Image (cartoon, rainbow, N blue to C red; front, side, top):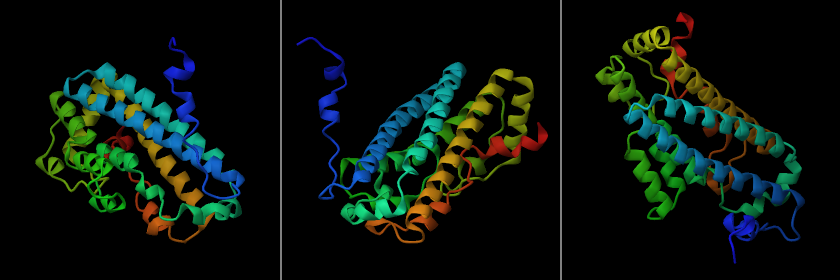
Length: 260
């Protein structure tokens, strides 16, 4: 059989991956499953895109990095927009099938944890939500110990004349948001002398803002749906999610705003 749309995209297999556990099936459980499966597909793509960013930073391919950040910024807007759909599910509707999730929890999204690790937000304690020894656990472990996009950004900045202090290289990866005067001065210098790099910085800031917006919207949906309850699978719920709110990935790009 010649390749066609259905076989190339494996549509039949894709459409057979949604299996509500409520019986009879609660109407909104299908929405819940589809939304989260779509998020996992976007996470898969984002991991691929940011691996390319890391490689392009290493090779100083500025315009490739600009192009990819433009794409990732647009993907983030899509991720935020999808929350509008999830918000149409009422708390009572969710509670009608919540128990069917048993120990399944969004905290177990290993791709999202990989994404956080790749961005430089490395909290080893989240590893406990993944079964040790599984391929997903090993992928997270590898990402936890690999250089992050922040490390590659520092290399790129250094190659363009920015002093990167040793403290920045050695900082605790669980402590996001720390900034350094030397980096701030260097970033400001590039903003004022390299308009091409300034374009990249603005796209990175746009993306960072999108991450923060997604986190905030996600927290409010969880709070609106289950309140202060613990999440399924024993996850800590809203209070844990709030810890990452308003914590920028690229803090050095935010601290110079008053100088621009």
